[in-house]
Length: 342
Ligand SMILES: [Zn+2]
Ligand SMILES: [Zn+2]
Image (cartoon, rainbow, N blue to C red):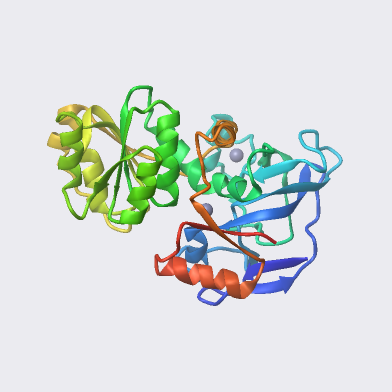
């Protein structure tokens, strides 16, 4: 089969002819119909975040049709539409048994530490193949498995409840899902904070109140819109100490700030004023859980989460096309999401 592989960090992805993966008794072989190109993939190609063992088929946002199943598989059948939970976990260790499989001691991520979905086929354990409703296109199913799922997990870590207000710092791939999911989970006011007019306009079309952080102070704007109260939940999806601090400062009494953006610098906080003074919480969110995917897919099926305007482009399983998209991601110039359709 054809597969796009990372051979050496810092070098372009290459198209190789490789064997169709073996299928163990509890595995399913999936014919890939859509595989997202994520900002993480640009980090893997550049070597900023190591991927191994090399050469490795990248691609962790995958949807397709079950082609073949192992003898012991009971959950899915050939012909089923599925999307793939990218964390392969043991289901039995201390963390898995407590429902936190993202900390599984033997866990592995497809397209990062084992072959992914930038190929014609991929094999995964059956529990990772989640049924994809007919109403959701493969391209959307693929993207749901990464940024949307991480946004849902971050909102759940923030313990959002009906009637609360939410601020989303950074309305790129994650944020555009977060704006919609927050409302689906009952948020009344959702603020979208960004510097990009086009992204803010799109977030507004999804019902958010736009705050342009280059033209006004984001914390002041949020306080003004909330009668001085602040928001109950703030998500930081950018990865900058400045916006992390703003997310905490924008909180109401007993508000929760959830950090899901990756920063390479430490965060300084006035803990008296910004945390204990109002019993605020600062929470980290890491990946997402298999158990969160059924709700996510149901919200997408009902169009409470619409990825239509977010999944902007498709490209074939072609090294030049995919390297071009990764180049754009490296320059932060990619228009929304691009999905490979093999
Ligand atoms: Zn991703
Ligand atoms: Zn485990």
